[in-house]
Length: 473
Ligand code: HEM
Image (cartoon, rainbow, N blue to C red):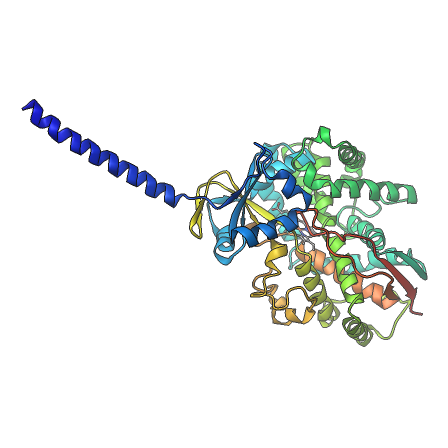
Protein backbone atom coordinates (compact mmCIF):
# COMPACT_ATOMS: atom_id res chain seq x y z
CA UNK A 1 0.00 0.00 0.00
CA UNK A 2 2.59 2.66 1.02
CA UNK A 3 4.60 1.92 -2.13
CA UNK A 4 1.58 2.48 -4.33
CA UNK A 5 0.74 5.86 -2.80
CA UNK A 6 4.33 7.05 -3.22
CA UNK A 7 4.07 6.08 -6.86
CA UNK A 8 1.03 8.36 -7.21
CA UNK A 9 2.43 11.28 -5.22
CA UNK A 10 5.54 11.74 -7.38
CA UNK A 11 3.86 12.12 -10.78
CA UNK A 12 1.24 14.43 -9.18
CA UNK A 13 4.01 16.55 -7.63
CA UNK A 14 5.87 16.74 -10.92
CA UNK A 15 2.69 17.65 -12.78
CA UNK A 16 1.94 20.31 -10.17
CA UNK A 17 5.44 21.78 -10.50
CA UNK A 18 5.19 21.79 -14.30
CA UNK A 19 1.83 23.58 -14.14
CA UNK A 20 3.14 26.17 -11.64
CA UNK A 21 6.30 26.79 -13.72
CA UNK A 22 4.30 27.11 -16.93
CA UNK A 23 1.79 29.41 -15.27
CA UNK A 24 4.46 31.67 -13.82
CA UNK A 25 6.31 31.66 -17.17
CA UNK A 26 3.12 32.68 -18.98
CA UNK A 27 2.42 35.29 -16.35
CA UNK A 28 5.91 36.65 -16.63
CA UNK A 29 5.46 36.84 -20.37
CA UNK A 30 2.26 38.79 -19.77
CA UNK A 31 3.89 41.23 -17.38
CA UNK A 32 6.75 41.87 -19.75
CA UNK A 33 7.64 45.53 -19.18
CA UNK A 34 8.56 47.91 -22.00
CA UNK A 35 12.20 47.96 -23.20
CA UNK A 36 14.23 49.77 -20.56
CA UNK A 37 17.17 52.15 -21.12
CA UNK A 38 19.08 51.90 -17.85
CA UNK A 39 22.68 52.90 -18.58
CA UNK A 40 25.41 51.13 -16.61
CA UNK A 41 25.67 53.11 -13.37
CA UNK A 42 23.41 51.84 -10.56
CA UNK A 43 20.72 54.31 -9.43
CA UNK A 44 21.95 57.08 -11.77
CA UNK A 45 20.99 54.84 -14.71
CA UNK A 46 20.81 56.76 -18.00
CA UNK A 47 20.90 60.17 -16.24
CA UNK A 48 23.94 61.48 -18.11
CA UNK A 49 22.85 60.54 -21.63
CA UNK A 50 19.30 61.66 -20.82
CA UNK A 51 20.30 64.92 -19.11
CA UNK A 52 22.38 66.30 -22.02
CA UNK A 53 19.34 67.10 -24.18
CA UNK A 54 16.31 65.23 -22.79
CA UNK A 55 13.88 66.34 -25.48
CA UNK A 56 16.15 64.98 -28.21
CA UNK A 57 16.93 61.83 -26.20
CA UNK A 58 13.29 60.70 -26.00
CA UNK A 59 12.76 61.06 -29.76
CA UNK A 60 15.95 59.05 -30.50
CA UNK A 61 14.76 56.41 -28.00
CA UNK A 62 11.38 56.17 -29.76
CA UNK A 63 13.12 55.60 -33.09
CA UNK A 64 15.36 52.92 -31.57
CA UNK A 65 13.02 51.13 -29.13
CA UNK A 66 9.55 51.65 -30.57
CA UNK A 67 6.31 53.25 -29.36
CA UNK A 68 6.72 52.50 -25.65
CA UNK A 69 9.96 52.47 -23.64
CA UNK A 70 11.22 53.10 -20.13
CA UNK A 71 14.09 55.39 -19.16
CA UNK A 72 15.69 54.64 -15.79
CA UNK A 73 17.41 57.73 -14.36
CA UNK A 74 18.18 58.99 -10.82
CA UNK A 75 16.28 56.09 -9.27
CA UNK A 76 13.11 56.86 -11.28
CA UNK A 77 11.42 54.79 -13.94
CA UNK A 78 9.86 56.98 -16.61
CA UNK A 79 7.83 55.15 -19.22
CA UNK A 80 7.14 57.09 -22.41
CA UNK A 81 4.10 56.42 -24.58
CA UNK A 82 4.02 57.75 -28.13
CA UNK A 83 1.05 56.17 -29.92
CA UNK A 84 -2.77 56.19 -29.78
CA UNK A 85 -3.25 53.29 -27.38
CA UNK A 86 -0.79 54.70 -24.87
CA UNK A 87 -2.21 58.21 -25.20
CA UNK A 88 -5.72 56.91 -24.61
CA UNK A 89 -4.58 55.11 -21.46
CA UNK A 90 -2.66 58.22 -20.36
CA UNK A 91 -5.74 60.42 -20.32
CA UNK A 92 -8.47 57.91 -19.45
CA UNK A 93 -7.15 55.15 -17.20
CA UNK A 94 -8.26 55.18 -13.57
CA UNK A 95 -5.02 53.38 -12.71
CA UNK A 96 -3.08 56.63 -13.23
CA UNK A 97 -2.91 59.67 -10.99
CA UNK A 98 -2.01 63.28 -11.82
CA UNK A 99 -1.65 64.63 -8.29
CA UNK A 100 0.74 61.93 -7.13
CA UNK A 101 2.88 62.49 -10.24
CA UNK A 102 3.42 66.17 -9.51
CA UNK A 103 3.45 66.23 -5.70
CA UNK A 104 7.21 65.59 -5.50
CA UNK A 105 8.20 68.27 -8.02
CA UNK A 106 5.83 70.73 -6.30
CA UNK A 107 7.22 69.83 -2.89
CA UNK A 108 10.79 70.42 -4.13
CA UNK A 109 10.24 73.56 -6.18
CA UNK A 110 7.80 75.47 -3.97
CA UNK A 111 8.49 73.71 -0.63
CA UNK A 112 4.80 72.90 -0.20
CA UNK A 113 4.41 69.83 2.07
CA UNK A 114 2.93 66.85 0.25
CA UNK A 115 -0.07 66.45 2.56
CA UNK A 116 -1.05 70.13 2.19
CA UNK A 117 -0.67 69.90 -1.58
CA UNK A 118 -2.94 66.84 -1.76
CA UNK A 119 -5.55 68.40 0.55
CA UNK A 120 -5.79 71.66 -1.40
CA UNK A 121 -5.13 70.66 -4.98
CA UNK A 122 -8.62 69.84 -6.21
CA UNK A 123 -10.25 72.85 -4.50
CA UNK A 124 -7.69 75.20 -6.04
CA UNK A 125 -8.03 73.60 -9.46
CA UNK A 126 -11.83 73.96 -9.46
CA UNK A 127 -11.57 77.62 -8.45
CA UNK A 128 -8.95 78.41 -11.14
CA UNK A 129 -10.93 76.56 -13.79
CA UNK A 130 -13.97 78.68 -12.95
CA UNK A 131 -12.21 82.04 -12.65
CA UNK A 132 -10.11 81.62 -15.80
CA UNK A 133 -12.63 79.56 -17.78
CA UNK A 134 -14.53 80.56 -20.90
CA UNK A 135 -17.64 81.82 -19.06
CA UNK A 136 -15.61 84.35 -17.10
CA UNK A 137 -12.91 85.03 -19.65
CA UNK A 138 -14.13 88.16 -21.39
CA UNK A 139 -14.27 89.98 -18.05
CA UNK A 140 -10.48 90.16 -18.40
CA UNK A 141 -10.54 91.78 -21.86
CA UNK A 142 -10.85 95.39 -20.68
CA UNK A 143 -8.21 95.11 -17.97
CA UNK A 144 -5.75 93.21 -20.19
CA UNK A 145 -6.18 95.83 -22.94
CA UNK A 146 -5.59 98.74 -20.57
CA UNK A 147 -2.55 97.12 -18.98
CA UNK A 148 -1.07 96.22 -22.36
CA UNK A 149 -1.55 99.79 -23.64
CA UNK A 150 0.26 101.06 -20.54
CA UNK A 151 3.22 98.69 -20.90
CA UNK A 152 3.53 99.28 -24.67
CA UNK A 153 3.67 103.05 -24.00
CA UNK A 154 6.85 102.36 -22.01
CA UNK A 155 8.56 101.09 -25.17
CA UNK A 156 8.59 104.65 -26.55
CA UNK A 157 8.20 105.59 -30.20
CA UNK A 158 10.94 103.38 -31.63
CA UNK A 159 13.72 101.05 -30.60
CA UNK A 160 15.62 97.81 -30.96
CA UNK A 161 15.47 95.14 -28.28
CA UNK A 162 16.03 91.48 -27.67
CA UNK A 163 12.62 89.95 -28.43
CA UNK A 164 12.60 87.90 -25.22
CA UNK A 165 13.33 91.02 -23.14
CA UNK A 166 10.59 92.94 -24.88
CA UNK A 167 8.05 90.19 -24.20
CA UNK A 168 9.05 89.93 -20.53
CA UNK A 169 8.99 93.71 -20.01
CA UNK A 170 5.46 93.85 -21.37
CA UNK A 171 3.83 90.59 -20.26
CA UNK A 172 5.23 90.12 -16.75
CA UNK A 173 3.73 93.34 -15.32
CA UNK A 174 0.50 92.89 -17.29
CA UNK A 175 -0.01 89.36 -15.89
CA UNK A 176 0.94 90.36 -12.35
CA UNK A 177 -1.33 93.44 -12.43
CA UNK A 178 -4.30 91.43 -13.72
CA UNK A 179 -4.01 88.14 -11.81
CA UNK A 180 -2.42 89.43 -8.61
CA UNK A 181 -2.81 93.13 -7.75
CA UNK A 182 -2.20 96.24 -9.75
CA UNK A 183 1.13 97.77 -8.77
CA UNK A 184 2.55 94.65 -7.13
CA UNK A 185 6.37 94.11 -7.25
CA UNK A 186 7.22 95.68 -10.57
CA UNK A 187 7.17 99.30 -9.53
CA UNK A 188 10.59 100.75 -10.34
CA UNK A 189 13.51 100.00 -12.65
CA UNK A 190 15.71 98.40 -10.00
CA UNK A 191 12.96 96.12 -8.67
CA UNK A 192 11.96 95.11 -12.19
CA UNK A 193 15.56 94.19 -13.04
CA UNK A 194 15.94 92.15 -9.86
CA UNK A 195 12.61 90.43 -10.39
CA UNK A 196 13.49 89.48 -13.99
CA UNK A 197 16.83 88.09 -12.91
CA UNK A 198 15.46 85.95 -10.07
CA UNK A 199 12.39 84.74 -11.95
CA UNK A 200 14.56 83.72 -14.90
CA UNK A 201 17.00 81.78 -12.69
CA UNK A 202 14.07 80.11 -10.91
CA UNK A 203 12.31 79.26 -14.17
CA UNK A 204 15.41 77.95 -15.96
CA UNK A 205 16.37 75.78 -12.99
CA UNK A 206 12.83 74.58 -12.29
CA UNK A 207 13.43 71.14 -13.75
CA UNK A 208 16.63 70.52 -11.78
CA UNK A 209 15.01 72.07 -8.71
CA UNK A 210 12.18 69.55 -8.98
CA UNK A 211 14.62 66.62 -8.62
CA UNK A 212 17.98 67.65 -7.20
CA UNK A 213 18.31 68.60 -3.49
CA UNK A 214 18.13 72.38 -3.13
CA UNK A 215 21.47 72.52 -1.27
CA UNK A 216 23.20 71.50 -4.53
CA UNK A 217 21.64 74.34 -6.52
CA UNK A 218 23.00 77.47 -4.87
CA UNK A 219 21.91 80.12 -7.35
CA UNK A 220 18.55 78.55 -7.94
CA UNK A 221 17.91 78.31 -4.21
CA UNK A 222 18.94 81.96 -3.76
CA UNK A 223 16.49 83.13 -6.41
CA UNK A 224 13.72 80.94 -5.01
CA UNK A 225 14.27 82.46 -1.55
CA UNK A 226 14.30 85.96 -3.03
CA UNK A 227 10.92 85.34 -4.70
CA UNK A 228 9.44 83.75 -1.56
CA UNK A 229 10.57 86.72 0.54
CA UNK A 230 9.03 89.07 -2.01
CA UNK A 231 5.69 87.29 -1.51
CA UNK A 232 6.06 87.20 2.28
CA UNK A 233 6.51 90.99 2.27
CA UNK A 234 3.50 91.49 0.03
CA UNK A 235 0.94 88.93 1.26
CA UNK A 236 -0.90 91.39 3.50
CA UNK A 237 -1.10 93.95 0.64
CA UNK A 238 -2.36 91.26 -1.71
CA UNK A 239 -5.12 90.35 0.74
CA UNK A 240 -6.08 93.96 1.47
CA UNK A 241 -6.20 94.99 -2.20
CA UNK A 242 -9.56 96.11 -3.57
CA UNK A 243 -9.80 95.78 -7.31
CA UNK A 244 -11.43 98.49 -9.43
CA UNK A 245 -14.28 96.04 -10.01
CA UNK A 246 -15.31 96.26 -6.37
CA UNK A 247 -16.16 92.96 -4.81
CA UNK A 248 -14.53 90.51 -7.22
CA UNK A 249 -11.38 88.82 -5.90
CA UNK A 250 -8.23 88.69 -8.00
CA UNK A 251 -7.05 85.17 -8.91
CA UNK A 252 -4.30 85.36 -6.28
CA UNK A 253 -6.75 86.53 -3.60
CA UNK A 254 -9.01 83.57 -4.42
CA UNK A 255 -5.99 81.22 -4.15
CA UNK A 256 -5.12 82.69 -0.73
CA UNK A 257 -8.72 82.37 0.50
CA UNK A 258 -8.59 78.62 -0.13
CA UNK A 259 -5.04 78.11 1.16
CA UNK A 260 -5.61 80.08 4.35
CA UNK A 261 -8.69 78.06 5.26
CA UNK A 262 -6.23 75.22 5.81
CA UNK A 263 -3.02 77.00 6.89
CA UNK A 264 -1.50 80.46 6.79
CA UNK A 265 2.10 79.23 6.57
CA UNK A 266 1.98 78.26 2.91
CA UNK A 267 0.63 81.49 1.40
CA UNK A 268 3.86 82.81 -0.13
CA UNK A 269 4.68 79.35 -1.54
CA UNK A 270 1.33 79.24 -3.33
CA UNK A 271 2.02 82.78 -4.51
CA UNK A 272 5.27 81.62 -6.08
CA UNK A 273 3.60 78.60 -7.70
CA UNK A 274 0.77 80.71 -9.16
CA UNK A 275 3.29 83.23 -10.46
CA UNK A 276 5.38 80.53 -12.13
CA UNK A 277 2.32 78.84 -13.70
CA UNK A 278 1.05 82.12 -15.12
CA UNK A 279 4.35 83.39 -16.60
CA UNK A 280 6.54 80.43 -17.45
CA UNK A 281 4.67 79.19 -20.54
CA UNK A 282 2.67 82.20 -21.68
CA UNK A 283 5.70 84.51 -22.14
CA UNK A 284 7.73 82.13 -24.38
CA UNK A 285 4.60 81.36 -26.41
CA UNK A 286 4.15 85.10 -27.00
CA UNK A 287 7.81 85.15 -28.13
CA UNK A 288 7.28 82.29 -30.60
CA UNK A 289 3.99 83.69 -31.91
CA UNK A 290 5.45 87.11 -32.66
CA UNK A 291 8.62 85.48 -34.04
CA UNK A 292 6.75 83.11 -36.37
CA UNK A 293 4.45 85.86 -37.66
CA UNK A 294 7.35 88.21 -38.37
CA UNK A 295 9.29 85.51 -40.17
CA UNK A 296 6.32 84.76 -42.48
CA UNK A 297 5.78 88.03 -44.45
CA UNK A 298 2.57 86.82 -46.15
CA UNK A 299 0.95 85.97 -42.80
CA UNK A 300 2.25 89.21 -41.27
CA UNK A 301 0.71 91.19 -44.14
CA UNK A 302 -2.67 89.43 -43.75
CA UNK A 303 -2.69 90.16 -40.06
CA UNK A 304 -1.86 93.85 -40.59
CA UNK A 305 -4.71 94.07 -43.12
CA UNK A 306 -7.18 92.40 -40.80
CA UNK A 307 -6.21 94.72 -37.93
CA UNK A 308 -6.68 97.75 -40.22
CA UNK A 309 -10.06 96.47 -41.39
CA UNK A 310 -11.31 96.25 -37.80
CA UNK A 311 -9.66 99.30 -36.16
CA UNK A 312 -8.68 101.62 -39.04
CA UNK A 313 -5.18 102.12 -40.35
CA UNK A 314 -2.96 102.65 -37.35
CA UNK A 315 -2.70 104.58 -34.36
CA UNK A 316 -1.90 106.35 -31.26
CA UNK A 317 -5.46 105.86 -29.96
CA UNK A 318 -5.93 103.59 -26.99
CA UNK A 319 -8.32 101.29 -28.82
CA UNK A 320 -10.75 99.19 -26.82
CA UNK A 321 -11.46 95.62 -27.85
CA UNK A 322 -14.79 93.85 -27.78
CA UNK A 323 -15.48 90.12 -27.88
CA UNK A 324 -16.87 90.56 -31.43
CA UNK A 325 -13.72 92.31 -32.65
CA UNK A 326 -11.55 89.57 -31.17
CA UNK A 327 -13.63 87.00 -33.02
CA UNK A 328 -13.06 88.87 -36.29
CA UNK A 329 -9.30 88.53 -35.77
CA UNK A 330 -9.35 84.75 -35.78
CA UNK A 331 -6.15 84.51 -37.85
CA UNK A 332 -4.20 85.84 -34.86
CA UNK A 333 -5.69 83.15 -32.62
CA UNK A 334 -4.75 80.49 -35.20
CA UNK A 335 -1.18 81.84 -35.22
CA UNK A 336 -0.99 81.57 -31.41
CA UNK A 337 -2.34 78.02 -31.46
CA UNK A 338 0.05 77.06 -34.25
CA UNK A 339 2.94 78.49 -32.18
CA UNK A 340 1.71 76.50 -29.17
CA UNK A 341 1.54 73.36 -31.36
CA UNK A 342 5.13 73.81 -32.55
CA UNK A 343 6.49 74.77 -29.14
CA UNK A 344 4.34 72.54 -26.93
CA UNK A 345 5.60 71.35 -23.53
CA UNK A 346 8.25 68.61 -23.66
CA UNK A 347 6.35 66.28 -21.34
CA UNK A 348 3.31 65.83 -19.15
CA UNK A 349 3.17 63.07 -16.58
CA UNK A 350 0.97 60.69 -14.51
CA UNK A 351 1.84 58.21 -11.74
CA UNK A 352 0.99 54.55 -12.37
CA UNK A 353 -0.95 53.33 -9.30
CA UNK A 354 -1.79 49.81 -10.53
CA UNK A 355 -0.05 47.86 -13.32
CA UNK A 356 -1.47 49.01 -16.62
CA UNK A 357 -1.38 47.25 -19.98
CA UNK A 358 -0.28 49.26 -23.01
CA UNK A 359 0.32 47.60 -26.39
CA UNK A 360 1.89 44.24 -25.42
CA UNK A 361 3.53 45.52 -22.28
CA UNK A 362 2.57 45.89 -18.67
CA UNK A 363 3.78 49.12 -17.09
CA UNK A 364 4.35 48.42 -13.38
CA UNK A 365 2.87 50.42 -10.52
CA UNK A 366 5.27 53.14 -9.35
CA UNK A 367 6.39 54.16 -12.86
CA UNK A 368 5.87 57.70 -14.07
CA UNK A 369 4.00 57.54 -17.35
CA UNK A 370 5.19 60.29 -19.70
CA UNK A 371 3.72 61.80 -22.83
CA UNK A 372 5.43 64.38 -25.02
CA UNK A 373 3.03 66.92 -26.58
CA UNK A 374 6.10 68.41 -28.36
CA UNK A 375 6.81 65.21 -30.32
CA UNK A 376 3.16 64.21 -30.61
CA UNK A 377 2.57 67.42 -32.53
CA UNK A 378 5.25 66.37 -35.01
CA UNK A 379 3.48 63.22 -36.11
CA UNK A 380 2.55 63.78 -39.80
CA UNK A 381 -0.42 61.42 -39.39
CA UNK A 382 -2.13 64.10 -37.27
CA UNK A 383 -0.44 67.26 -38.50
CA UNK A 384 0.62 67.07 -42.17
CA UNK A 385 3.92 68.88 -42.83
CA UNK A 386 4.32 69.08 -39.06
CA UNK A 387 7.41 71.33 -38.99
CA UNK A 388 5.74 74.08 -41.00
CA UNK A 389 4.05 77.06 -39.39
CA UNK A 390 0.61 76.76 -40.99
CA UNK A 391 -2.01 78.71 -39.01
CA UNK A 392 -4.71 77.76 -41.55
CA UNK A 393 -4.72 74.18 -40.24
CA UNK A 394 -6.71 75.61 -37.28
CA UNK A 395 -9.64 76.39 -39.62
CA UNK A 396 -10.87 72.88 -38.83
CA UNK A 397 -10.96 73.45 -35.06
CA UNK A 398 -14.30 74.39 -33.55
CA UNK A 399 -12.96 77.30 -31.51
CA UNK A 400 -16.49 78.76 -31.11
CA UNK A 401 -17.24 75.66 -29.06
CA UNK A 402 -13.85 75.92 -27.34
CA UNK A 403 -12.50 72.77 -28.97
CA UNK A 404 -8.92 72.42 -30.22
CA UNK A 405 -7.74 70.08 -33.00
CA UNK A 406 -8.08 66.36 -32.19
CA UNK A 407 -4.49 65.49 -31.44
CA UNK A 408 -3.48 68.80 -29.88
CA UNK A 409 -2.18 68.07 -26.38
CA UNK A 410 -0.24 71.20 -25.39
CA UNK A 411 -2.55 71.99 -22.46
CA UNK A 412 -2.99 68.36 -21.42
CA UNK A 413 -6.44 66.87 -21.49
CA UNK A 414 -9.12 65.47 -19.23
CA UNK A 415 -9.67 66.24 -15.57
CA UNK A 416 -6.62 68.41 -14.90
CA UNK A 417 -6.20 70.19 -18.23
CA UNK A 418 -4.41 73.56 -17.91
CA UNK A 419 -6.90 75.94 -16.23
CA UNK A 420 -5.08 79.02 -17.60
CA UNK A 421 -5.23 78.10 -21.29
CA UNK A 422 -8.02 80.50 -22.36
CA UNK A 423 -6.53 83.34 -20.35
CA UNK A 424 -3.11 82.77 -21.98
CA UNK A 425 -4.63 82.74 -25.48
CA UNK A 426 -6.61 85.93 -24.78
CA UNK A 427 -3.65 87.78 -23.28
CA UNK A 428 -1.37 86.91 -26.21
CA UNK A 429 -4.05 87.73 -28.78
CA UNK A 430 -4.57 91.23 -27.34
CA UNK A 431 -0.80 91.73 -27.09
CA UNK A 432 -0.32 90.88 -30.78
CA UNK A 433 -3.21 93.12 -31.87
CA UNK A 434 -1.96 96.12 -29.89
CA UNK A 435 1.73 95.82 -30.79
CA UNK A 436 0.89 95.56 -34.51
CA UNK A 437 -1.68 98.36 -34.29
CA UNK A 438 0.89 100.64 -32.72
CA UNK A 439 4.22 99.60 -34.25
CA UNK A 440 5.83 98.43 -37.47
CA UNK A 441 7.94 95.49 -36.32
CA UNK A 442 10.80 93.72 -37.94
CA UNK A 443 13.12 90.88 -36.85
CA UNK A 444 16.83 91.68 -37.17
CA UNK A 445 17.99 88.07 -36.66
CA UNK A 446 16.68 84.72 -37.85
CA UNK A 447 14.30 83.07 -35.39
CA UNK A 448 16.34 80.73 -33.13
CA UNK A 449 15.63 77.00 -32.87
CA UNK A 450 13.89 75.68 -29.75
CA UNK A 451 16.18 74.50 -26.97
CA UNK A 452 16.13 70.74 -26.25
CA UNK A 453 17.55 71.26 -22.76
CA UNK A 454 14.35 70.96 -20.74
CA UNK A 455 11.30 68.73 -20.68
CA UNK A 456 9.14 70.75 -18.32
CA UNK A 457 7.14 73.50 -20.00
CA UNK A 458 7.36 74.92 -23.50
CA UNK A 459 10.84 75.13 -25.08
CA UNK A 460 12.65 78.44 -24.78
CA UNK A 461 14.59 79.87 -27.75
CA UNK A 462 18.10 78.50 -28.13
CA UNK A 463 19.70 81.90 -28.84
CA UNK A 464 18.89 85.56 -29.14
CA UNK A 465 16.78 87.41 -31.64
CA UNK A 466 16.46 91.18 -31.91
CA UNK A 467 13.30 93.04 -32.88
CA UNK A 468 13.16 96.56 -34.31
CA UNK A 469 9.94 98.52 -33.74
CA UNK A 470 8.79 101.92 -34.93
CA UNK A 471 5.55 103.72 -34.06
CA UNK A 472 3.26 103.69 -37.09
CA UNK A 473 2.11 107.30 -36.75
C1 HEM B 1 0.48 78.93 -23.58
C2 HEM B 1 0.61 78.88 -22.29
C3 HEM B 1 0.40 77.66 -21.43
C4 HEM B 1 0.67 76.35 -21.68
C5 HEM B 1 1.27 75.74 -22.94
C6 HEM B 1 0.28 75.60 -20.51
C7 HEM B 1 0.37 74.21 -20.38
C8 HEM B 1 0.01 73.49 -19.26
C9 HEM B 1 0.11 72.07 -19.13
C10 HEM B 1 0.62 71.11 -20.20
C11 HEM B 1 -0.32 71.73 -17.90
C12 HEM B 1 -0.38 70.30 -17.31
C13 HEM B 1 -1.63 69.59 -17.81
C14 HEM B 1 -1.59 68.07 -17.67
O1 HEM B 1 -0.64 67.51 -17.13
O2 HEM B 1 -2.54 67.44 -18.16
C15 HEM B 1 -0.68 72.96 -17.22
C16 HEM B 1 -1.13 73.03 -15.92
C17 HEM B 1 -1.42 74.20 -15.29
N1 HEM B 1 -1.46 75.46 -15.86
FE1 HEM B 1 -0.96 75.95 -17.74
N2 HEM B 1 -0.19 76.46 -19.57
C18 HEM B 1 -0.15 77.74 -20.09
C19 HEM B 1 -0.55 78.91 -19.48
C20 HEM B 1 -1.04 78.99 -18.21
C21 HEM B 1 -1.45 80.21 -17.55
C22 HEM B 1 -1.41 81.61 -18.18
C23 HEM B 1 -1.86 79.87 -16.29
C24 HEM B 1 -2.40 80.75 -15.19
C25 HEM B 1 -2.99 81.86 -15.41
C26 HEM B 1 -1.69 78.43 -16.15
C27 HEM B 1 -1.98 77.72 -15.00
C28 HEM B 1 -1.81 76.36 -14.88
C29 HEM B 1 -2.01 75.65 -13.62
C30 HEM B 1 -2.39 76.26 -12.27
C31 HEM B 1 -1.78 74.31 -13.88
C32 HEM B 1 -1.80 73.13 -12.88
C33 HEM B 1 -3.18 72.50 -12.88
C34 HEM B 1 -3.33 71.47 -11.78
O3 HEM B 1 -2.56 71.49 -10.82
O4 HEM B 1 -4.23 70.66 -11.85
N3 HEM B 1 -1.21 77.94 -17.33
N4 HEM B 1 -0.49 74.02 -18.07
